[in-house]
Amino acid sequence: AQSVTQLGSHVSVSEGALVLLRCNYSSSVPPYLFWYVQYPNQGLQLLLKYTSAATLVKGINGFEAEFKKSETSFHLTKPSAHMSDAAEYFCAVSDPQTGNQFYFGTGTSLTVIP
Amino acid sequence: ETGVTQTPRHLVMGMTNKKSLKCEQHLGHNAMYWYKQSAKKPLELMFVYSLEERVENNSVPSRFSPECPNSSHLFLHLHTLQPEDSALYLCASSQTGGTYNSPLHFGNGTRLTVT
Image 1 (cartoon, rainbow over the protein chains, first blue to last red):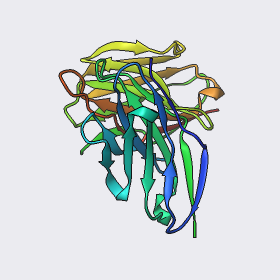
Image 2 (cartoon, rainbow over the protein chains, first blue to last red):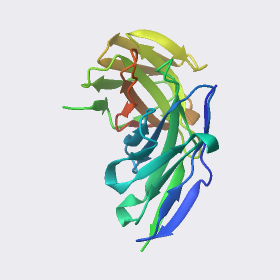
Image 3 (cartoon, rainbow over the protein chains, first blue to last red):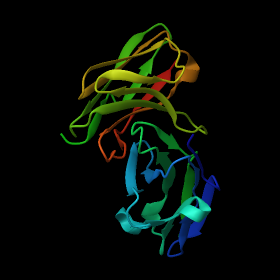
């Protein structure tokens, strides 16, 4: 069984500060992991993905995430927040063996303070 | 057109109406999905079609009826909905099978309001 936990439904950071959004997963097999971003009235857009290659994954818009098997974590970071980063962020996990089962976290709303 | 396209973007319907949501993917994927996104709730998987066969139906009420005529098109037929069905309905596609399964690619959704 797969599940995803995102700690903190709301995170606020100042413009220029570090962004850290937390994601922990539960999986019986080595999973694929994803981060998505959603802007108001839009669908989810893929930020980055981990598929058992390099543990540090770089995505779009300056975001990156590190897969830590020992901590079952896949936290999303960005060194310097921009106002345009304000959005809802979702962590997701899938089982590579089944391919069409995706499990999403409850989302974290990021606010960037000018 | 590229990616996943959903129409209409907004829909207001009465509880006795019948309407359909349409989704089209231009990515050559072999799986398509319907998700429901309500305020303050996690994303809810409704239906999954893989190679045009329905492989997942997450206890969705029968007033929602999916249709997948081919691998590029997905519909969600709606009838006698309830106000609590008001939500953002998201379509997604992916490529499954083999040694790598792609991420989900989402459309921009249909904002449904049931009055």
